[in-house]
Image (cartoon, rainbow, N blue to C red; front, side):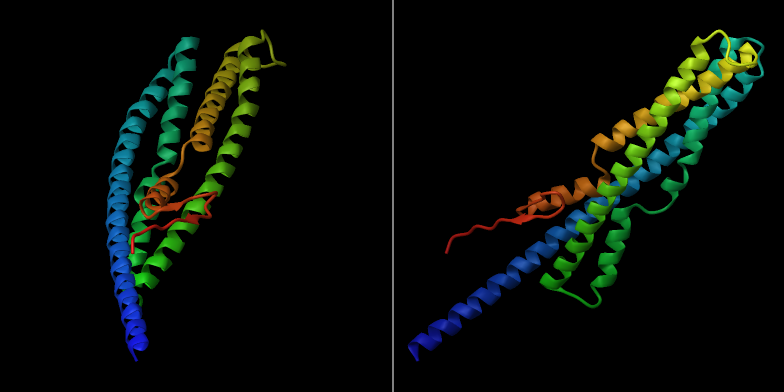
Amino acid sequence: MTSLVRWFAVVTLLAVCSGVRAEDRLRTLERELELHAERGKTERIWSGVFSLALAGTLVPAGIVMLKRDDDLVRLIGIGTLVTGAVQLLRLPEFIFPSDMERMRASHQRRRERLSGAALVAETEREWREKAAQEHRVRKWIGAFNLGLGVAALPVGLTFMLRDQVGDMEHRKQLNVGSTLLGIGVGYIGAAAMLLIADGPTESSWKEHAVSIGLAPVAFGGQLTASGRF
């Protein structure tokens, strides 16, 4: 009877401790989701404002310079116009909610049917999968941009440096060369950022994994736990 009572007491204690740990994990998870979602929202809004302001400055300036007779000014105008147009093309990504904002909303909906450890596990699974997906997409887009940049850069330099390319007028040749050169440099720069820097969902998942003692290894994981009894 004494052994049975002790066994029941141990099981009850472990269940209570497990419930406390689950609640602690849930509070930590929701606090980090809120932090990263608000950070993503702020960055998205300000990046959109900056891109819109930059495009609003560069596109008109580029159009004005293209109407000048001076070849050098026209070359600068092409580069300015292309840079402004790229900023305009990026605007849609700042309109829609970020991954972390959508994940926060998904977690709130999930709260209606799950709680405790199950809720934490489901949200962490989604977070980990989105981070892995962002990692794959980032690498593919980075490699694609690098390929475009490497292809455009030497062609642009050829048009810029050669005295004559086919029957093309010299002014038109310089215009084409400067445009390709600007595109090449821009794509290579964008590729470098994509291939080197983690995306926001990746970096937030790594921060969360470290905070709970889950060391991320190629978006798998190694769970470590310690304690005193």
